Image (cartoon, rainbow, N blue to C red; front, side, top):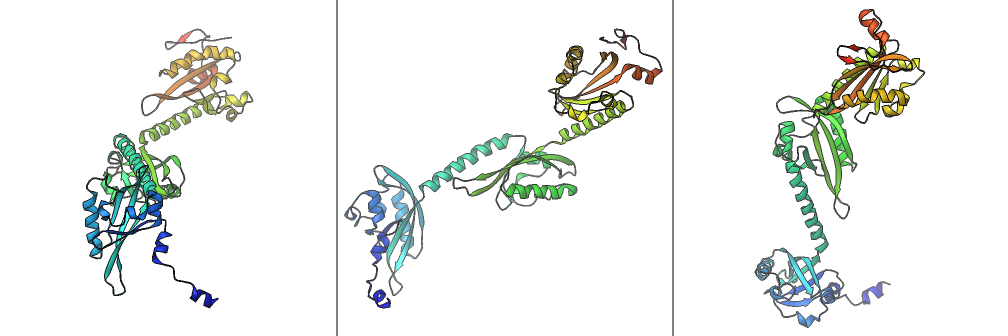
Amino acid sequence: MVNSIVQTPPVSAEAILDDMKALVAVLSLDGTILYVNEEVLRRSSERSERFVGLPFASAPWWTHVQGISNQIDAAVGEAVRGGKPVLDIETQLSPTQRIVVEFEIRPARDPSGRIAALVAEGRDITAQRAAERKLRDTEFRWRTIAEFTVDWEYWLHPAGHFLYVSPACQRVSGYTPDEFMQGRVSLSSITFPADRKRSLDLLTQALSGSTGHHQSFRIVRRDGGTRWVSMSWQPVHDENGKSMGVRGSLRDVTDVVKAQEELQRSVEAYRTLARHFPKGAVALLDRDLRLVVCDGPAFEAMAIEPRSLVGRRLPEVLDSDVRTRIEPLIHTAVSGSEVADIVTIGGSPWLVHLTPIRDANDRVAHIIASAVESQDAWASESGERPTEPGDTVGGMGRNGVS
């Protein structure tokens, strides 16, 4: 077997070049084409005689590219001096095929070490350039939008540092985009100490390839103030599935958090009120009149589990007669005005009180509804039994319904 290997004729350099899928041309030191491999001939559907003897800079593949001859001549000169220049050239191998080729021109040395010829090896990078152009276009559109949004937009490198930070970051944090992109400050470094582990966990999730929405934590501004931010993100990949990092946004939700805290305080106040009356009840409704919170002894008296009502709309819970009487009150509350009235429920008069709760944009976001049997309410205030339904108290009508 050894003898058979020894006796095998050596493979010629031309055979090796012809077997390559790259586009290869061998040049003399003055840039004249001495040889082109089979891949060039296959793609151009020409014979080698069509190219051999021509200056590489004047080959028909790129005569349509203005000024390319000077660039190629300069690259040939650099290779003759021992360099390895690289050129990206839009190449037309045939009338119907135009591609982008990355050519490297490198010296070929003889056994004495002298440069005897040059080898120009080209790699088709058309798809790669198209993907890069598409990515640049996408990034340009995204940046254009990000520059004008009120949210703090960002792009994280897969390694975790910021590639882009929108101008809104300065309004939210007090720090400039450059300070984040140059690494002088980081999201972790400005996170409120008690929330730092949470923010690091969120960044780890983001860089692991997951998608996240509306994850909140606190940051400390440059001026020392504390703000709540809501973080959202999504992974970005190129056409080959390679990670390009994470794009996302941070929104200042401080006013929303404060409104929610105020809402919770109001709910607790009404919940306490309801519990102080034997048949009191309190409920929190969203703008669609869906029950978010229910509590109070009245539900127990009616053998109703309050939690079973959560998620249902109030009109669905009330019977038709009560619904007809209470709808005008609901309409008033949804319109933004506090309202109270007495409504007969199950043969007893109940004091119903609706309070609209506004969000940070001054829109009605929730309604707190409380109800107590009116005898209990008035007895608690004055020790007197309330007047009959239909009378007025403090300018508010009492629509008692039997």
